[in-house]
Figure: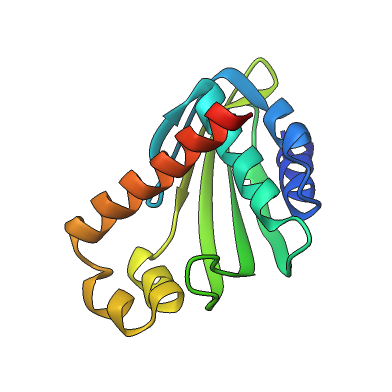
Length: 154
């Protein structure tokens, strides 16, 4: 399973969303603070959207500390990019937890400090409201609206 996780993050660093999607089980459940919980094709399409949005831009993904067995795994990964809405530089540090089924990722949970991310992405405004449930709900609504528009176009 270590090879699967390595393939997943190598593909992300290369903005290769199809290889990432192929690492996911058809019944994938993905969760993170920015999107909330996504199932199946929505989870795969989230990576397709993120990769498409970063093509031709300065975008760096690194990963480390991959630990797996046949059933579960974990990794640390980091993304450095300019947040499209504000143009501000973001360096997000993420912890990932995985569950595997049939040789694929069936559950993927990313955790990161949303307040730290909001402070980088939105500056003072993010620093002030980035800890609130209001901000998290609004962010998830916006990201899921973007995902729906992406899915409609593609």
